Length: 330
Image 1 (cartoon, rainbow, N blue to C red):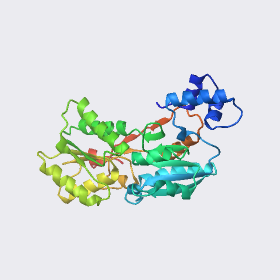
Image 2: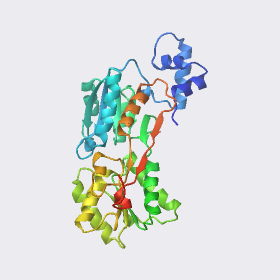
Image 3: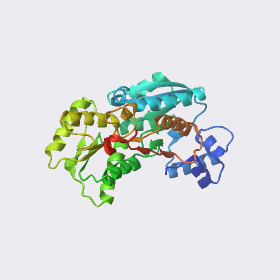
Image 4: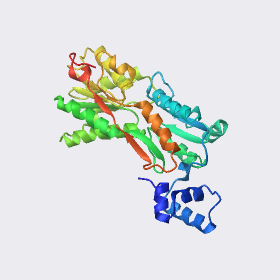
């Protein structure tokens, strides 16, 4: 757990208000007290980018350009809706900024003139480092990095539940179709998949793990992934996909080859997007309250002294016909 204002107050033997005034360089304190608090904060590794400098009136929602396709990847549209709802309740004006590694991020932020920043999904470490230099409060949503306030879903626990579900159904060769492991949430899901296999005493077979790349056509990548899995030895009888969009593309690729879902291959996704329940067959998945993710991110951002700076929201396994057969209710 990263240092909070409460931690600094306890270590410095002063009030939370004193810590806040000292770090914001406000009046009302002796210079000796200010230096004492700042020294304790430095020793504890407190990230001053998490400190509110006054009333927040404008927020910029930063999204990496590889996520900025709300049709193909609807997850973040719901997260943004949760952020917008929270902003509206607090009279904060939100703007959306889509950035990539070649952009002058600091110049773009200057043009938006935000008082605070919400970063959603994957972002390069170099960009996060530059954001700390703005001195503005920052919260990470569906992303984790040391020293930042962050809110995530239980990616690891959800992946454990998905993989255990497939094993409980008697499936023997479980494949995992992943996205880039540089993404925190995807890396956690990969870890959960492998941990479930380890706990069950099963050996991890690298031939059963396929990694898709961003920026490439999803249906083509899914078809290539199925081709590779079918050629890598005994075919898998179950596939856990890192998100629902990928799972639906994999389902299409399997059916195009004449494979039956779930008789030949059981299939599980993650996120419970709108198309999961209406797929043929309906997709077993992990339900995520995506709007709550956005709302909680704003709550964490606006709290001067949160009880915890890293929040994890629960997920729920939704069992449907892609693993249990046609008699299953969505």
